[in-house]
Length: 235
Image 1 (tube, rainbow, N blue to C red):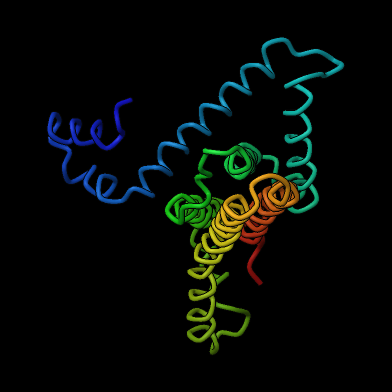
Image 2 (cartoon, helix red, strand yellow; image 1 turned 135 degrees about the vertical axis):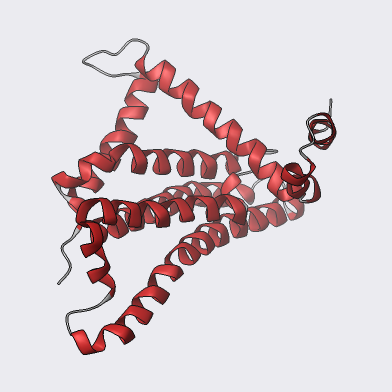
């Protein structure tokens, strides 16, 4: 089997991509997270193809599973953001399904969840951060800056600093929460497998399913709340 590092090294030399690929070559965790992120993306594409290949009024199999996830995200979106949030369903549903599948593959021995790498989670969190403000400026124009000023003019400089710190803390919070839970679960499960490989890991794996769904729910819900806040009129 050809090692991924050899492939990257060949690409770097062949196409003069040393500056671009050097961080991956020097960081095994980032490379592993990238490979498994592509793997999760491929899983989602295959699931989408099988779910939509023969759509029926009475869903079954893959269609039933996908409809359950989609309807769950849609219900959470409507209760959190209202009808206006429907426009952002593709973005938020993509987050939810990618994070959920990434979390769940951690339960398969030998597979690595991309969400156990801080770089993957930082990319997801920064996407939420950027899109929140892009949506805010698209909705309100320059008036979106009023979100950072507060209702009292003479307190605007202080409120601006506080709001700026709060907004910068959002991607940090999203990143570390997801990373800490998934990486911690990986470590605990590995320890139990090494100590008692037969029976003890089973309840830990069941707990892992719960953690996978909870972390997906929390990340998606916070992303919805941030975007909903950007859509509101400043007071």
